[in-house]
Amino acid sequence: MASGGVKLNYVKIYADDHGETHFKDEELPMAFLDYAPPAPPLWVGPQGKATGVTVCGFPPAWYGDLHPAPKVEWIMLMTATIDVEVSDGEKRTFTAGTESSIVYLDNIGSKGHISRNVSDELSIVMVTEVE
Image 1 (cartoon, rainbow, N blue to C red):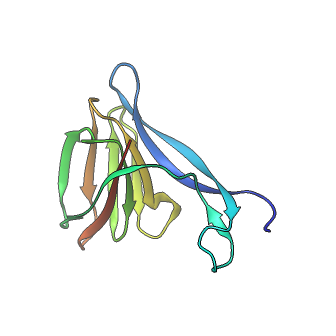
Image 2: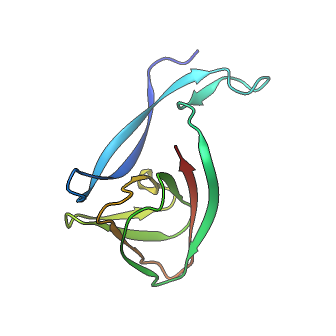
Image 3: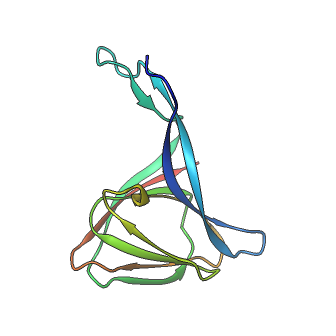
C-alpha cells in the first residue's frame, strides 16, 4: 500500500448569496484502493453520481458572454486553452494537460461567467453533469 495522501487539485466556480461568481482553488482527496482487480491498487477519488456526459468543441475565437452553468458539472479541458472570467472580475487561464484543466462549475442561477477560446485550435471539453 502506498503511503501519504494524494489530492487532485481543481478550480471551483461558485456563486455567493448575491449571485456573484468567484473562483476557489480546491483539492479532492484520493485513497489508495484495489479499484479494478486484477490490476494493482491505484489512487481513487470519491465516487459521485453522473447524470449526463457530453463533449463540446469551442472553435477558435469562440466567446460566450456572461452565462451560468446549465447544471452542476465537472469540466475537463482536453485540448487548447480557454480564458474564464467570473462576475467579480477575476480572470483565469485554463490549459489542457495541466492542473488548471479541471473545473467544477456550481453557479446555476447566478450572474455567470465569461468563457473564450484563446487558442488557434478547436478547444475540446469533456462535460460531466453531476447531482
